[in-house]
Length: 463
Image (cartoon, rainbow, N blue to C red; front, side, top):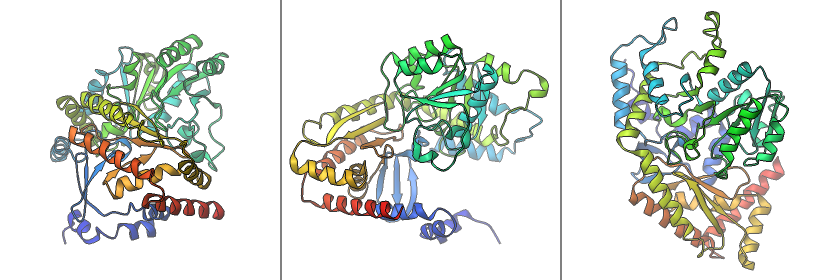
């Protein structure tokens, strides 16, 4: 009897919600059904998803930034097929691999000149865990400082650097010696570093939760303060790296030189999980300082041939298709066009971002009728207005987006960097139409709002 994934998929394509409810996280299924996202996708290509009826959806979520080069890119598929057929020795462990050396070489061509070494792992949270350990060992200090509202992963060490309390609740006690400062606040940062007992300050150059962009002098001053007080400067580029912000690394917008850069997500091409930490020679030589410490930190599957091949192919595609440049241009167009709508709509506060990391923020309006409707949603659950935007965008405009974070009135776009001018125009038109509908009271979109508020209040009562 032959084994066929294609046959299994065909037999069970419409069983996924039942299977997930029975064997995985049933709450996730409830969420999808409640907000009307329970679609049966059959195919995906580039920036588009296709359901079983052939409907096309524009994916502005890209698997939380994983599919920067688009879904199922043929170059990456070809590289993975070729790697499988070569029957290469893989994960020999008492050996080193050619592909990991090549991928490290290509990545280090893109980093600041002080960054000359690579460590590979499987995910963004693993990259952060490695950075914590490397910082502690290098500085012989324990404390780590991070930013409020920052996001660095969900394993225990990285969770200890989580700036969103909802993710931390009930999982303590967490790693000792970790404390937060407000993002973009240099006074608070210097106060935290002044005792010269902090191993590392870790920061997203642009915060993912809310798409918060720092002042122009913030990261240069972060670099200076870290050097002054002997603290390692760690840039978490898991989401912002590899062209997401219109530069290869977000730190390139400010020409800073961190001691470590954490990366993952887009490096995988969307196929094989791969993460990494790029670092200075000093950090590498300090952590791996003797032969008996050659394996003091690692990850079993980290340098597997498939992951390394996916990474190499992804970097090739990004260069060949000029995706960093496309991210800068199309992203800027979207932000400019959406901001041009703010004069038309009271609910729309602003669009902001860098490249294709974009936030659309909403606010309480001045008109009494609109203000009362806004207050109704906020009383039920802060940030609920955004669900009233994302759901019609999905159901009526077939555009997949996300709310930027808990309790935020911010819709976030994190699309593939392959968006075209046609996609750009569709996005702007869809937001224009949807935001216009929110200003019509009564209206069908506010019927949705009342339902959302009702569900939110029921959840509060049952909590």
